[in-house]
Amino acid sequence: MKNRKSYIIFLLFSLGFMVFSESNVKDENTVKSGKDISESFLEKDRKEEVINENSDEELIYLDQIKDEEEEKEKLEKPGRITRLINKIDDKVNPVLKFYTPSSYGSWYLIKTTNTSEAVYENIKYNFKQEENGYRIVKTYYIPEAQMWMESSERGWIKEKKGKVYLMTENKLFKSYANEIIYFDSKYEYMIVRFESDGSTRVFSRFPVERIMLSEEEKEKFEDILGNIGSLHNVVYNSSNINLKDERLLDKENQEERARIIEKMLIENPDEVFKIN
Image (cartoon, rainbow, N blue to C red; front, side, top):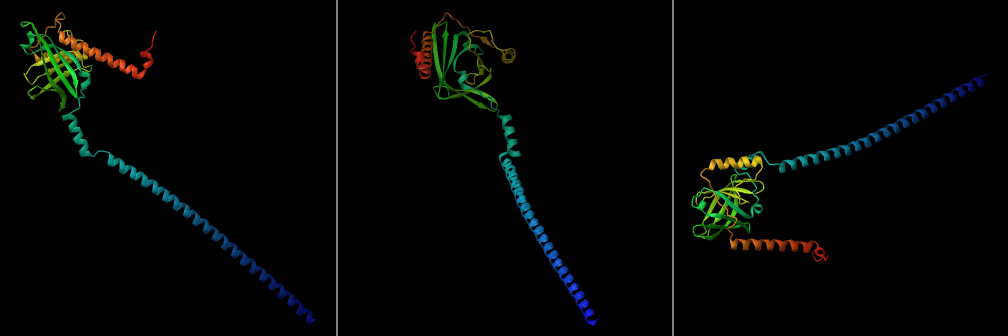
């Protein structure tokens, strides 16, 4: 009986030991698995931190690019003082853009304030291209002497303080600033106030008094003429021909035809030598 009790006590003790050992093993596994989970979360957090850090670096880099672009725009954009200087300069000295090549060729004097000049006939100015300006050849007929006269001088265009000047230089190398107080957009009319003799002259591409301008241009033109006063009409006699002037005109026409043929030879030589 005593031995039986001892055996039961031994079984209970063994069973309790086994249960205790198993629970310890479970507790260790639980602790280990919890540790693994914590480590995995920590690792994930570290990765996210790295990603976030990289993202922050990219954002900073983009901001830097934006700042650099803004800084560049500031440097390229003129400052307040520069803009003010440019604005004042545009008002004081605006660019009128008188296109010199459009003024080449023949100009007929149709009106003048010079009384002695008014008795002449067929007064014509030939603005011939010379370097960046002109060789201005003036021809006119004196009825009393029944002879043609000719003179020439160098000329060029100069713009200053919103005004356009026809600068001329004679054989004595004395230059004059003759103000062009009117010219139309097609360069068919000019009104020039000459410094050399104080006379105002009205030029036209046509040897007739009838003004051929648009209504707006014509109104402006006539307003200027009305403020001049003492203008005399210049007679143009079509039957009175300057042979030298005609030869010069014929020479210019031949040169123009030669330029056209030369251009055709370069662009389409077969068309030039085509035989019908």
